[in-house]
Image 1 (cartoon, rainbow, N blue to C red):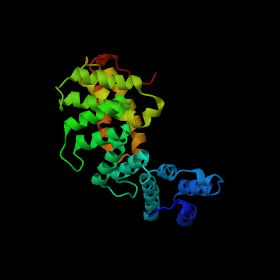
Image 2 (cartoon, rainbow, N blue to C red; image 1 turned 60 degrees about the vertical axis):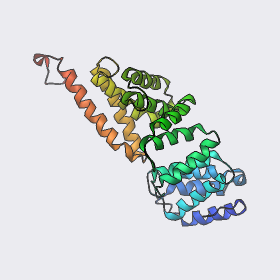
Image 3 (cartoon, helix red, strand yellow; image 1 turned 30 degrees about the horizontal axis):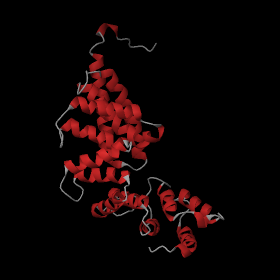
Image 4 (cartoon, helix red, strand yellow; image 1 turned 45 degrees about the vertical axis):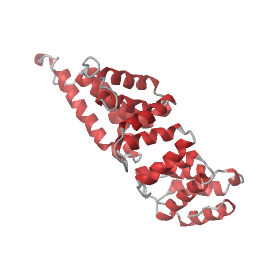
Length: 276
């Protein structure tokens, strides 16, 4: 859908008229609200698109709404908005909620944003190079991109550097360095970071403590981190991040292993069957 600034109000009204307010109440309420706002003309198309993408998760959007959101982003991309490049690239990367999954389109948009100095784009490119999204895995480029992201304070980039030290990818294998990086991320994590970082990070720390990787074995700390990982991963999955289902299973299995290790230190004759 081609978006024109001068006709955006009318286009948004047409989209609103097609929305089923029972199925997509948040989308309907948002569009209805901004169309009744005297300051509609001051709202950036990119901001409208971002707000719509947060609505009614994790329901799949109808094709006309996906086209409208895509058009909003493309309008801003034509004007050099690197945040719009990053956001639309993310939709193509995930391929959820009715958006097409296209790694080539995602990489192209990430590179466009990175050329403008967007550090979030470097983190996204790091994932593409690391996992080989529409390319062969390139750990050297992944390390470079994650390093740039980490320098900007992005914790996902930082813990991915920890992964690379843990596995010896591009850098020499160094489990202690990996643990230091993960622990540093944990110490730096803010409330704003928790929604997308806490689950994967706690899972990694649980693994390190459970098996004594890069640190002393500590099943109590492992159980602590696995429990937090489970809660935060549930939240991520409910929000539509289905790729973390395997991580959730590993967090649950890790708790069972940690409990088994802890139980070995409790003499059998001290178990009490009745609740206290």
